[in-house]
Amino acid sequence: MITLATRAGSAPKRVLPGFGLSLGISLMFISLVLLLPLTGLFGQLAGLSLAEYWAIITEGRVVASYTVTIGAAAVAALVNGAFGLLLAWVLVRYEFPGKRLLDALMDLPFALPTAVAGITLATLYSSNGWMGRLLEPLGFQVAYTWVGIALAMAFTSIPFVVRTVQPVLEDLPHEVDEAALTLGASDGTAFRRVILPHLWPALVTGTGLAFVRSLGEFGAIIFIAGNMPYETEITALMIFVKLQEYDYAGASAIASVVLFVSLALLLVINIWQGRFIKRLHGGAG
Amino acid sequence: MQRIGDAPRVRRLLVFLALAFSALFLLLPLVAIFAQAFTQGVGVFWANVSNEYTVAAIGLTLFIALLTIPVCLVFGVALAWLVTRFNFPGRRILQTLIDIPFAVSPVVAGLIYLLLYGRTGWLGSWLDGYDIQLMFAWPGILMVTIFVTCPFVARELIPLMQAQGSREEEAAVTLGAPGWTVFRRVTLPNIRWALLYGVILTNARAVGEFGAVSVVSGAIRGQTNTLPLHLEQLYQDYNTVGAFASASLLAFIALLTLVAKASLEWRAARREVHA
Image 1 (cartoon, rainbow over the protein chains, first blue to last red):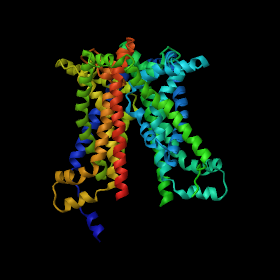
Image 2: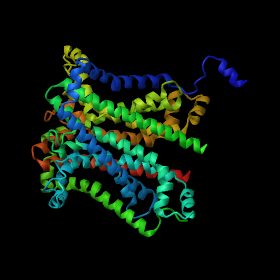
Image 3: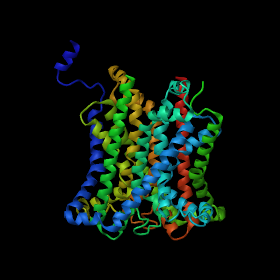
């Protein structure tokens, strides 16, 4: 009866104040800061014919930059997937001296400005840097090659994997381990068959986020990349180069590709994550 | 109780791998920043840091961060209050929109602002008529910095406020407390640490932003150069020690950020144990 009465009334009464104010501030901010600037991009793009747009985004040097960016980001994401899983595992499962320091260190790439990371990695891996001096005699050239680009991408994005996998691993009940081990599975088999199925949605999400971040990264990469046309130019740099030539239309066209790809990937990751969470809750309830 | 991977041999191997990887991949760069900054001694480091252009860059960087934080704070609290305390159509869309700055490449972020507010943009050309120039000046740097940092406070608050629920606030309202009092006396004490951490993250990103700022700043030495842009110029001029002197200041802020995060988490964990 009571529910009926409220439903029959005008709208359900909101107990807490501040709906109008917080809605007003949020909408104004999102419109002015996030959405309004996008109109500038679309305005610039509207001045291009479809043929011109296509010509810009499929120009040889630009296409080469897609290949470099996507290839290096994929390698960086895979390396991060493996090492991020290892780091999350070690941080959750084992006790050892220096564990809290290691845990704090995981956030360094997020806290450290990208330009600082960029000049540091470039200096470390150049031929007279601490790492370059060791690696170059062995035939590994890192600075000014795509390996350097992948390295810089991996550095800036590894916290995504660690911090996405870590909480899921922490919430995994002891019984999961015990069940597998009592049934006589070896460590390797138990991990692969029992732990990994629980972890891999988080692992895919974290690796995906790391990949998206790598696609757009700029500051950490340009110093170590060498920026040779067709070889070590990333797409974000192509936008920057076009801007310096005052080619706003060209910069906008390439930026629209980058923007579309990263927003689409983010959407896919969000949907994927939503489905996974729903399944998890469905299983628990 | 035996758990997977508990065998001493496996454990030792994995811990060793994790430590070796982190030392080489994360710790070594951090050490290198300070080593490079001090290669020619404290005197040269100090000369670089107290250089007129470096001081101007530090000043601008702090000025931008100081203006960015309150804006992000008001927005973050308002958005978190909105999406965790009320149910309305479009709530999920708002939460997705707020992630845009994280997905957008910093260079693209700078570009969209330049296209709108630059001389050729529709808003920029209108402002130009009134002799207002936002791009290649500090307001432009401030605007893109707000763009790239605005999700942090909201992202820290939303999960926490969702988990805490609104019962305490509803009780306070039922007892007749006015809205602001409820916020100040009930909500704020519950969220203050998350709020603080959001501010710390906002600050870290605001002082360190490079890609977006480099598009809109014009990088005029002593005028529109933030610290990250300044160190880039020094590095390109082959003044490595000077570049790393500036870099070490930013790395120091990053270290403070990590310490703050670790101690806030430790505090939260301790409270959980006591509760």
